Amino acid sequence: MLQVPGGIVTRARRPIWIWVTLAWLVFGVLYAYPMWAAVNGSITAWQSVARGLMHVAPVALGGIGIWWVTGVVSWPPRSRWTFFALHVLIACTFGVLWLLIDTSGIARSIGYTAAFQIVGVFAGFQVLDGVLVYASIAAISYVIRIAKRLREQEARAARAESLRMRAELAAIRGRLNPHFLFNTLHTLTALVRRDPETAERALERFGDMLRYVLDVKRSTREDVSLADELEFVRSYLSLEQLRLGDRLLAEERIDPDALDCRIPSLTLQPIVENAIKYGIAPRARGGRVEIVASLGDDALTLEVRDDGPGTASTVLDIAAGMGLRAVRQALETRYSGQAQFNVVTAPGEGFAVTMALPIQTTAELRATVPS
Image (cartoon, rainbow, N blue to C red; front, side, top):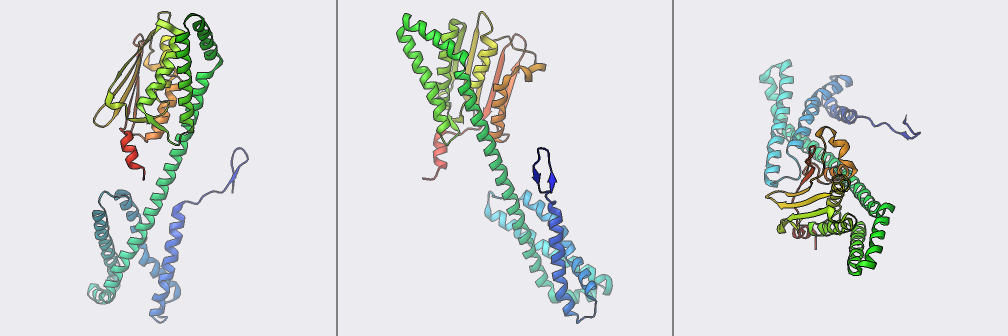
C-alpha cells in the first residue's frame, strides 16, 4: 500500500513481467514432475525441476516474440484467412524451433545421432505441444491488447464527453454573461421602439441559438451536421451585428456538398467568437470575418479568417485565447490524431484558423447504426 498526496491510499501494481515469470516457473515445475516419474527416480527432484525449467525457458523467451507478433499482426485483421494462415505458419515454425533447441540440448550429452533417435519418439507430440503453447500465448496476448485498447477508447470517450460538456457550458456562459445580456437587451429595447420587426427577428435568432445549445446538451450524439452548426453561428453573428452594426462584416464561402458532413458540435462558434473578440470589436473601424468550408477527397476543411491586427507567431499560444485551445484539444481527443488544427497569424494580417477533419456524412452515420 502506498500513501499518495491528498491522503488517498492506493495499492501499488506489480509489473506484469513478475506475473509472467511466476507463471512460467509454475509451468516448468509442473512439467518436471512427469519427467522425474518417467526416469524412476534416477535423478533427484531438484535435477528434474532444473531440466523442466530449461525445457520451458526457450518457450518463455519465445513468448516475447509472440507478443511482438500480435502487435504487428493486429486484430481485427483485414483478411481473416490471411490472419489465421500466417499464425498457423508461425506456430508450426515455433514448435519446430522448440524441438530443435531440445535436440541440441540432448546432443551435448550423447551426440546428435543418439539425440535424434530419442527425439524421434516424441517429436510429433512436442511440435504439436509447441503449436498449442503458441496459440495459448497469442490468444492471451490478443485479449490483453484488446482490453487495453478498449480501456483507452473508454478513456478517450470520457475525456471527449467532459470536453464537450465544458464547451457547452462555456458557450452558455459566453452567450448569457451579464455584459452580453445588457448590450443585447439595450439594443433590443431601442429596436422595439424604432424597428419592431428587426427586434422580433433578433429575439427569434436568440431563441434559436439557445435552443441549439440545449438540444446538443440533451442529445446522445456529440456530432452535428455542418449545416446545423452554421445556422448556430449565423444566429450568433446576427446578435453580434446588433451590437457592432456595420463594423462587423461576415462572409461565407461554403461548398454545398460539405453541408451534410458531421462535425463536433460547438466547433466553429468559439473560433468565430475569438475572431470578433480580439480582431474586430476592439477596433473603431471594425473588420471582416470569413467562414470557408470545402470538401476534398479525404478531409473536410473549415477555415475562419479575420482581418484584425493579428500578432507575432512567437506569442501565438498566449494570444490564441481559451476558445482556440479548447477546440484544438477537443479535436485531438475526438479524432485521435486524424484531425489537423492550424493557426496562422502575423502583425497586421489577422488570424486564420484552419481545421481538416475526417469526412463522415449523415448517410454514412445512419448506415453504421443497426436498424
